[in-house]
Structures are given as structure tokens and as C-alpha cells.
Length: 146
Image (cartoon, rainbow, N blue to C red; front, side, top):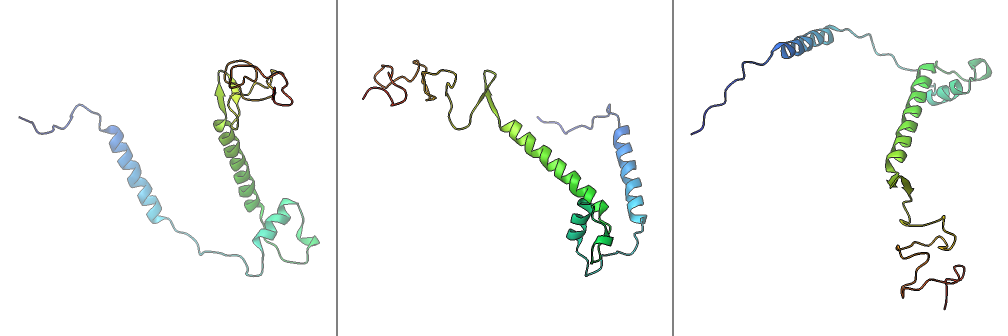
């Protein structure tokens, strides 16, 4: 026979009440907030050009066209560039494979570049440049005996 689920009375309701109170306060603040009229940029002004001029510190006196103040855009542009650079660096770092403390290349798995007799060819554990019949290639520059 099964029993009905029971409410656990020994738990602390204080964190839940605090979260509910915070939600109510934030809802009241957001609902009562007033925003000014939206403002745009003039139709004949290029925002991209303004960001470029701000990046290279070209003033409006040197230009024959109207530009807008773009320092805020420039700060956001540089912060996004740094964040994307960090993300790419992290992706490359996480994509790197290691086995036994050594970095393994993505193209060829078991290349012994420190062994001059292997010729940089993959080995299968039977020694340098092992042939299929069990022998070792004599000349690594021409591919061994023919």
C-alpha cells in the first residue's frame, strides 16, 4: 500500500521568502521605471565611419562630414574583440590533445620526429620504420629496399 506524499516541515522557508521578496521589489521597480523619449542618430551620419574615426583618433575638424561621438561604441567594440580573442584562445587550448604529458598532433598519431632513422613516418611499435614483413628499411630517403 502506498502513502500520500508528505510536506517536509523541517526545512527552512527563509531563503524562499527572501527570493520572493526580491522578486516583488524588482517587479515594482521595473514597472514604475520611466524612460525618456527614444533618440536616434541623424539620417546622414555614418555610425561605422564614426567608430573608425574614433579608433584612429581622427577629429571632426579634419573631416568634411558630420560624425557622432563614438567613444561609447569604441569601448564596446574593443571589449567584444578582447572577449572573442579569449574565447578563441580557450577553444584552441581545449582542443589540444595530450597523451602521457606530450602534445599529440591532430593529423598523424604516432610520429617519432626525434628518431632520425624513422624518417618521420608513423611507427607501429616494432622499431624505426618497420616494414610489413618484419624487416627494417635500410634507406629511409628512398623508402628502403625495393
